[in-house]
Image 1 (cartoon, one colour):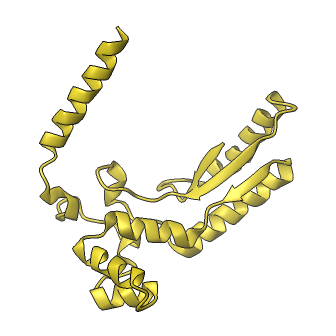
Image 2 (tube, rainbow, N blue to C red; image 1 turned 30 degrees about the horizontal axis):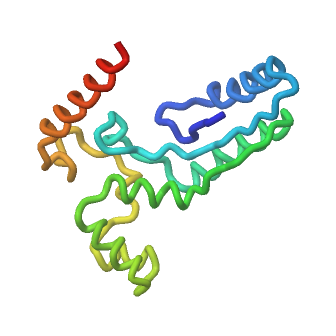
Length: 163
């Protein structure tokens, strides 16, 4: 099973209901080995979450630890994706060309990730702040109409072949 932590608007009630659901699920699937993967939510471009602030690393660590502890008490296996990797993924996903420059600097082995961000002029905490709905986003500079048309043509070809 795959769970997300750090979902905007998630409440304590949601956190209490998840282990209860998993306990009922495990009971219904008695004899089946279940592994629960917990991943921090990573906002992605071209989704409604592109405007939302990502939970802080401390909040994500606390949320994933609480959830993992509850799931282990039920007796299920748990795999938790690292928060640092999720934060980096969000930075890369939501960044602009400066993030690309930082990635090149880091990959060249010249500096640490944080140093590469600093050198490229990237605010590492930008992903933890709400983005204005009117603010220009790096990926909106590209017209995706052609890509959408190509994807739709491919989809129609695939579905027509099944009929």
